[in-house]
Length: 431
Image 1 (cartoon, rainbow, N blue to C red):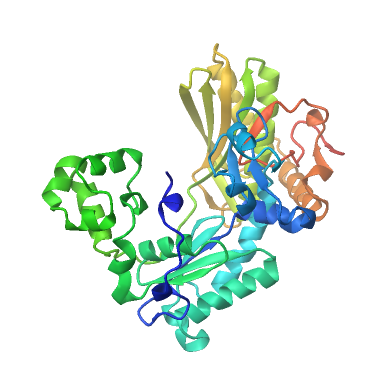
Image 2 (cartoon, one colour):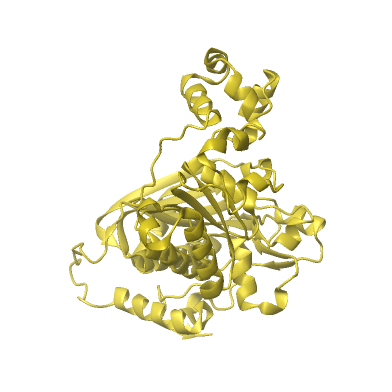
């Protein structure tokens, strides 16, 4: 059971939008069924229908599901075959991460228009500290309503907001407010809000920890709060016992930290059937390298280390890395390094998954690039940037490597776009 499923959705009037928010400076804003909502926004005919976004192959996994699909039990991270059996009439769409990234960027800008203290957790959720915005925009609940209104009007999608004194409680509040709602947890009612919840609602309580706590007779947060720390320490260890005891008592001293630097950017793909042909691996690495390069340039980053990930048919995973002499944000250089790593490794066993990641990120604009001997001053990076502009106007399917045209799509994407979009070993060809 995930944490979102562990939090009951029943409405309690004590935590309504007009509850006392005077000591509630933290907001947690969570987009509702984000990937599915973005797809429905550009396909209005799907509104009101069960929509599932994720890998469409036999090993595909659900990334997002509309609330119409969730009524049938479809959930994120569920195998797509299971989702199809639960909801056979669902519209299943492959993910379009560039579209989700663009929508996320617009939503995060709305947040930053309210306060500079924004801590993104992922593309579709963030913490905000609105303490300093009260004088200009009003109480926290008023600010939350303002954010929800702007997101709906400007992006045509909805979000849910938790308003609370701490990050942990605010996040639980947004979960309980879903979909398209707001919940305020007054400082004086934090324990009333927390204690009826199951222990799974606490950060750090997964399936194994929950089973351990239940064997001790601890099924609710109230039970855990009343338990001696020594008992928890013996069952869970020192760090986990202190952490969970503090959360169960409503204590969470963490502040909103806006300067969270991205450490790496990567993408991976699981094949529908295990692969042995190097040509299939190279095509996959080509697409993944393109995806990573586009994300790097979009974020204004360049990286120095390229990592190749391979998962074999027996689920053993192998990682190999190479650090370059300079930074890169081009698909051509990322692919060349990843392919070199693969040819050096050359596993004999069938391959289930491959991934590419660029680490050691730095600001691209302020980082000097060292040309190799004989390399022109302008070339591949400018060409790839030009295809970014074409894709932004006409979509990612408008341009791509010629070597991918007509290739059999035997892969299920994990965080990569539907088609490659930049020249690699071939010039771009209209499609």
